[in-house]
Image 1 (tube, rainbow, N blue to C red):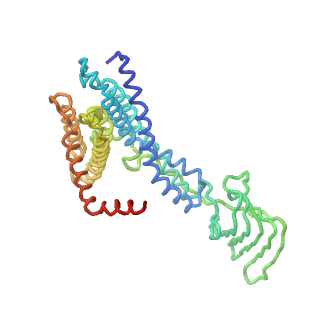
Image 2 (cartoon, rainbow, N blue to C red; image 1 turned 90 degrees about the vertical axis):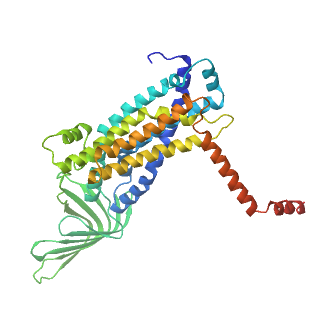
Image 3 (cartoon, rainbow, N blue to C red; image 1 turned 30 degrees about the horizontal axis):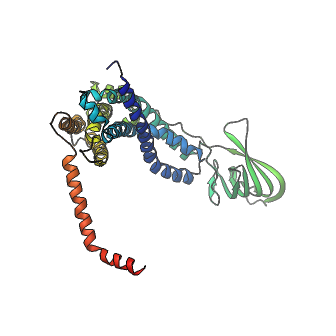
Length: 409
């Protein structure tokens, strides 16, 4: 394992390209659906658009926990499929190189990415999840500088309401402003202005609303006659509302690192319900890392097509198997946290089934004479394809097509 031959380096080059490509494509597909929802959420909250990319960046480690296994599996599978179709695999087997020897480089990749995945699910993912929730809180509270929504009444501090007809230059140039401020002792202030903008002050809790070309109506209260003033420029101070600081990290097991989860699981003073919830998340994160060492066996077995066949059925089955395993562990985590099943068994029983399935496929290919794990499935798929094409052929009268073509010239 410590020395790599020329073929090992050649196989590594075959693996790395589809591995990185599959990883990027999987991450982009997983991010795409959330990106649309985040754009909708940020626009409804009136926040800046760039916060969407910050939120997606904090969600990326969560998607990489699935994208990395898919990338490793597809990289190894497509590499072995390529050398099998080109008969390079038959030449290697003819000179006495075993299938297990061929797994040296795939296991090196699996080990490397298992360590990367361990760091992601163990430390990076909880911290980034907390940062994501912090951004959501700041966006809803207005701490990110949420823009004034055009055509709607917005509350600015205590007793002050603002309405804007038009917003230009990313909110720096406001047009058609209407402001009403309610003061003490029944006093009120109503202002309309053609233009306005927000300015910062030395006091971080106060901003300045500079109005231009408008009219001000001041009502002293107590039945006094209101005063009406016209102005070219008027500065109106706005007291920012007090914003509570965001909570500390650790609200739920999604924001807890692996050492923190382990302290809850094995701690003597942890309440039973909290230990059960932590155990469900703890074992699932371990399974997400350990499964990397099973993927080389599955990829090799499903990457080698049957003789005299170039079917890509193995790629389809491999993706279904890995995604199904991921969903089973995700469902097991929820059921384990609810106490409907033991958290340990909810993760490690599906993992044991996935291991046995992968090793059975590998044993069929490597140790059964003439064994082809995909042979029967490929034959069934071929029969099903012929059956479907036969049914379609009966439903569509091809003779009519031929007659129409001949009559057309």
